[in-house]
Image (tube, rainbow, N blue to C red):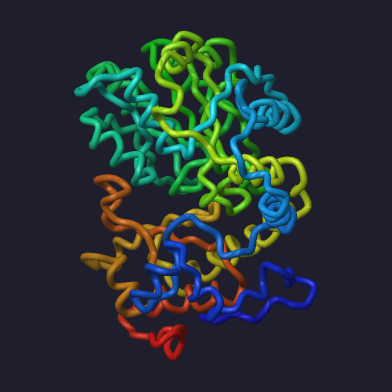
Length: 410
């Protein structure tokens, strides 16, 4: 399957000159877990690319200058105003910084919201398939999962609004968790779709928790529309969650923001002990500010690389695994693939054991996801070719040697 290397014009320094040996020595979960399995990683949603130099400089400058003492953030971090500025400049969505709060990540934010607004046994609507930690959170907290399923059509993944309405009538849930852009399908929801969701949320009085962490990873002609910007009612019932973690590859800084449309729920949150649910660190805030303020050129290059890679994955799957159903993602750096035609009991394990590639997929993404795999294509062109070779070989029953053989004793 290996394709030609990118032409000099198609190569992107810093993005396409990754060394597998250097990557394999990383201690983060993406590579460490894959190396232990003797496989290349295409699973967890981290990118392989180095962070933008401006972010690294901001973190190093803070350490060198001694700016790691207690911060003077009595009225909240500078992220509140910066988030409001970014939402206005990118989407025309006006946000009051006073309604923004910091969290260490989106999972923590969702858990806090469900803790404050729901009780055990309450229903929570969520698109399926979905991000496994969100599904696991709902189950671990004793809430009922109410599925809002995607349907695979010739035009791509589409939301099943008929099933949603029937479930709303029967289950009477309290919360709707909206992931847009969607993980794992890569769908970017249209204004008509978001408007219909907003109408149902109003009709059934749902609190909407909108995960928009992939909003800055979208490919033309698609564009992101913040759910809370759909209208006044949507704004008043929506908590918007986001972070620079995905779009700038700084998830390890553990920094996210939550914008509260429901004033009463924000007041409930603010009556809690201020540090009960953790606080963000100075490096996390400085790194996020550097990303949002100074890294547009880096992000523009990133999107060109990811767009090239998603097209390469699409072409490779069509040519070498035509029986596998997939749709080119409209956003994110993830491709969701139905490999049920191969009649393999555990495709994730097969790809790992035969193809020496670690992908995600299966039941953690939902009860109907058993025959699906998720491919993370946020890596260099060369590493991506190794990944695609391994996946193709494994699904055809062939064993390949891992590129890690001979590295680090693997």
